[in-house]
Image (cartoon, rainbow, N blue to C red; front, side, top):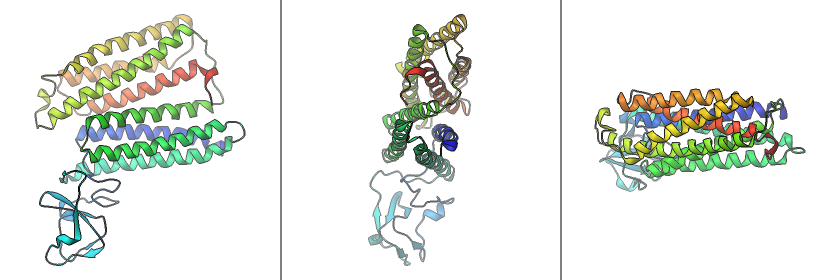
Length: 339
């Protein structure tokens, strides 16, 4: 079991990042309500591809929980039955969690794939938990940690449900994102705990504290970014063209933009300190590289009216930056990792 544990944990981490990417792509394409119910999609395990599949059809066999769209509302089948020629309201309940009843095949399948990747990530986490029992004698805390990750994945799935039920409430979307980063953090702790060839690093308290501060700045910047994104989503939903999305930005945008300079300067100082003191933290090269790409993507969104894909890149790079910075902290505090 030990033999496969690290690989399983790494695969689970990659899948969690794929979930973050898929979630960002869902928001980019406006597909958040592509599946208006949860965990099924319009009452199906495999969603429909055409509008006609969601319309009432005489003679069709309907299963309990199956959904149709009628009179711009979602109706849910009460039981299994075969539809008669005339529509019988007694066979249906109105979907009461929200009143969103629009079918768009692209949105539906983008959201469905997002959920599918999430399910795969959850399965990978459960497999990792099962394999963790190979460390029963030497690292019992590792078993608890992997179990906690499974709990967090379940919580994340429930959050996804609440996001859909709330018709994409901005606060719940932000919470959903932060929960994903928390899962990433715990996955990295697990992976680092079983690494056999840990490279020794020079311990420098000043560097360590600034490194922790830089991670805190990144988290603040991510939260500010989600606030800006909420404003952009609100404007875009009105049908306004991209050129108007940041025409009248909120104060959060200006804070987010200015705060990026603080984040960059802090990490450049860490980069310089690492080289000057020969501490050996080579992953700081990736931190600086990701920051520059992140800033470039932010600039392109503002000055070039949100080129396709830049929003997704911006979100995914921020989550990658968080992961690398967190792993750097684990390396810097290697003797204090509790697993």
